[in-house]
Length: 280
Image (tube, rainbow, N blue to C red; front, side, top):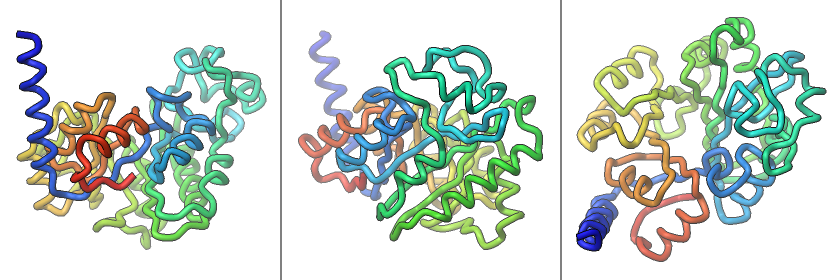
């Protein structure tokens, strides 16, 4: 019975692959967090070496104003430190090492890594929550510094997106930089929701005039992605921790999808679904 279930599941995956007709932009989530030491220079470099030009990362601010790449506001999960990241100075952060022995990556060093690379797709996530750690003034400072740094990258044919689940930073960027591209394939703003694509998500995007959405794969339906597309909204889905997640996101109609297993995903698609229109 178990073999039968596995076979049926495989057929479903194949159906999902054949149903996928839209081009997909795959990108390395935190440098491939289930394959590499997340948000470290070595992770991004090895993703690049494997053939990825798409990346996602998380940006936080230390107590003395230095920007680093780290997802959590606490240090315990990924480093040998403890406590709240935002309450540490850069000197304290420099003393820490990740669980795999690497230094935490400064945002400026990531920008340097991206210099002179073309055809990039980068999602710069502004991690400005909880509100108790980021006043409106700090949110705007982080957003502005990330925006200016991204605009300094020497690159061609690239899409650089500023993303957040905290609408404050995105609203600031729209107001401070009216030239920012809001709608269309090169849209520069993305709202993250801890939900699937829903009617409420679509309405929020329209109200905020932000036309790219980041939503959860397991809670999204194909019909809702189609509805989002009809409204002109680009859909980026997460997480992709297994090949099955990637195939599901493809079947749902995702335009972009992050992957925690970038190398495994690329290898699997090339060997098993070469007809898929995937850009890495």
